[in-house]
Length: 123
Image 1 (cartoon, rainbow, N blue to C red):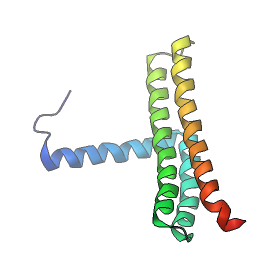
Image 2: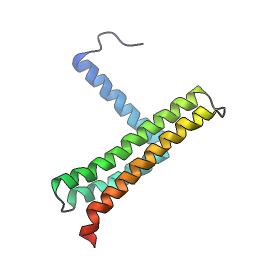
Image 3: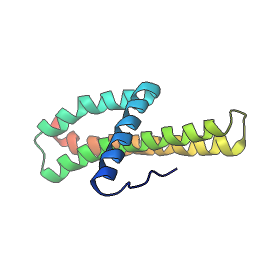
Image 4: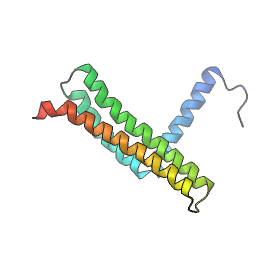
């Protein structure tokens, strides 16, 4: 049920609170999100310190954020599917597999982007 008078700055503060709650829940309940966040914490300083043009720096950072965003969406899809029921159903498996594939593609995009940008600096 939607709360009344939920507009303007009040809505922004409430939405921010819900977002922080979601990040906290993802950290507490999703091992993959924790692993990817730790990876981002390690790689973000590299993206900020490496001597590359601004556009390439932005690409390095954006691909890291895309991985986290897609993982959060994957976790949300898994939670909804699990809420519906734990019995094995082809559509439940399909939803989870497709969401997992999205995470895989985001990770591949991140890896390829980092490789293409940093390869000339290393070799």
